[in-house]
Image (cartoon, rainbow, N blue to C red; front, side, top):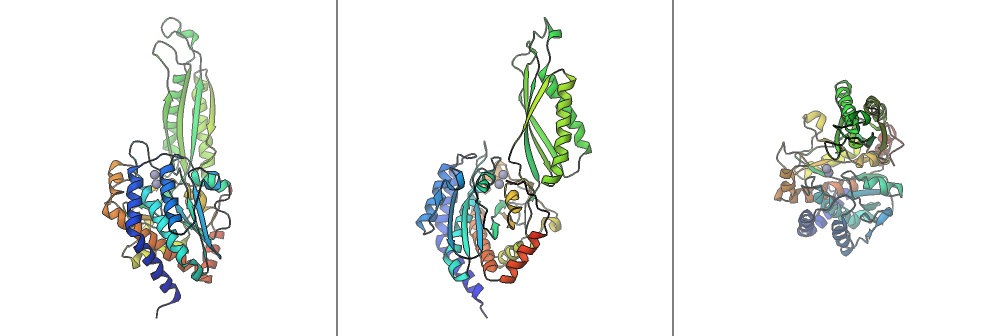
Length: 399
Ligand SMILES: [Zn+2]
Ligand SMILES: [Zn+2]
C-alpha cells in the first residue's frame, strides 16, 4: 500500500529530478567562482535568484547579513534547509560548499512543492562564511533560527556518515609589547616581544601533552619583528582552541591563556588578548531525525554509517553546531570522494566538481526533503524529535 507520505516523497523527488541539470550547473558555476567569508555575492545571488525563478521568493541580505538569503513557504511545523557556499583561500571549493548550496536549493524547492499537502512549512536559509566567519551566528542573532521545528543540511565528504564529529572551537588573538633597542649595541635596554611569543608558544606546546586526547590547540605567528638588528617591540599570534563542548572549552581556554601570559611575564613584556566573540559549538545530531535521513538515503542506494560504528569520522568544527543547540538538527556527510580524501585539500576541491559530486547533490536534496516529509506527516515523530532534543546537554551561549 502506498501511504500519503510515500506519494509526497515521489512527487518531491520528481521535482528534484526535473531540476537536476540546472542544480548541477549552479554547483559547477559556484565551484568556478570561489568566494571567501562574507564575500559570497556571486554564489548568494546565483542560488537565491534560481530559487525565486522557480517560485520560492527568496530575499538576499536576510537576517542582517549581506550575503545571507532566506525564503519561507507553508504553514505548520517549520523545517529549515540550510545552504553554505563559501570557499577557502588558495584551494577554492576544497570543502565542497558548492554542493551544499545546490543540494539545499533543490531540497527547499521540492519541499515548497509538497509542504502544503504535507501540512508543514519550509524555511530556506543561505548561511555564508562557515569557514571561520560564523555566518549562522550572525544570522541567528537576528532571528534566523527562531520558530523552527528542525534544521538540516548535508556536507560532502569521503564517506556517507550520519554526522560530522564537530567539536567546539574559539579563536584567540594575542599581542605582546616589549621595548625596541639595537640588538647589538644596546640589547640590555630592549624587551623582546618575539621571545615572549616564543616562550608562550612553548608553554602551549608543553600543555598539549596534558589535555584530553580529543582537544586541539594550534597557533601561528602573525608578527614576529621587523629586522634582526632591532629587538622586536611587537609580536602577535593567532590561536584556535578546541574542546569537545562549549562547556569543556572554558577551562582549556584559561590554561592556554596562562601559558601565553607566562611568556610575557618571563620576558618583561605586556600581553593583550582577544577571544573571538563567535565560538563554534559542538554538533548535536538529533537521533530520530538522522534515523529518518538514513532510511531515506538507503532508498536511494546510499548506506549512511554512524562514524562511531564505522570507525571513520570527519573531525572539524562548524557553526551548524551552534544551530544544533537551538533547534533539533542534522549535519550528515555525503560521499563525493574516494575514502581517505580529506576535506580542505586540492584533491577534494577536484572531487567537488565531478560526476560523483553531481549525483550527491541530487541524492542529498532528495534525502533531505524525504526526511522533512517524514517529519511533517508524523505527529509522533515530531514529538520524539522534540523529546530527544529536550534531553540533550544544550549550551545556552551559542549566539
Ligand atoms: Zn565545510
Ligand atoms: Zn571546511
